[in-house]
Image: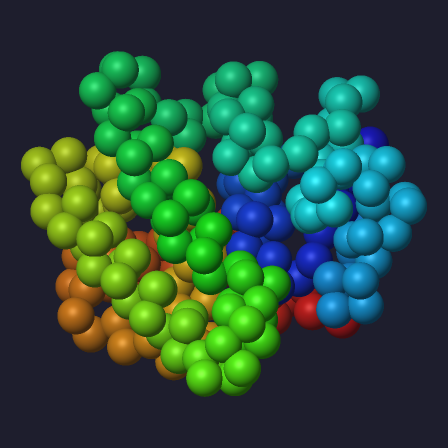
Length: 208
């Protein structure tokens, strides 16, 4: 049985919930409470030496890092998360990385909290999140001004980029970021949020 070690508000875990639902892959969800510090416990560290979520136990393997797992699912389940042509794959990866490695990396809660503490509370968590999320989304919106953009980030098939975009927009809304300046993102999101797999993965369905 496939097992996802999950936290309901984790963007990275949210990505995998979307992917698994899209594939119709059955799995058990085991919560790792980040607020309680369970990610630093011995059990989670044995699965995931970085002390993070998600970890996916699948096909007899323990896999970590959401983008690596998504590519594994793409390769083993013919998911179509990456286009077949090299240029298309490069574009989808660029969009996904712009979100997962640029926005998400600095807008992790532990990073924002450290910034607040190191600044003597001169920088609030909310201000940090709003600044970097807005800056990152502006770039992604420009990247979507491209002939390969369709109803979704790349054509009309859900891709690695779309799977990364949905959780990032959830976080943008959570921190009060105005999405008005990003018309291309909003158009793609309207399509994505109508998909049953995206709806099934929403944090509100998974919160304790």
